[in-house]
Image (cartoon, rainbow, N blue to C red):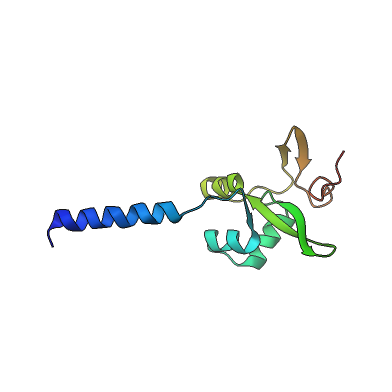
Length: 111
């Protein structure tokens, strides 16, 4: 096999891999943890402490909510790292504090 044939084969395989890759709007903790190479516990703590901007959604487990992280936040984390604690973030024209005590918007109870 010549070098040009091998290069063409590699390019075809790369095209197939890129087609398989899907970009999601939101990632669950397990998916996010795998993408960033951290444990699920660590990522949940980052969410809880406001180090990663995350939202809570119904999880199908009764009153228990699950953290979800947007694709934009994944890209921001990969570029910049963790947020400082106590920051405020603008979401859908609302200013949200990432401090632990202000969770009303995260839980969907904001006006």
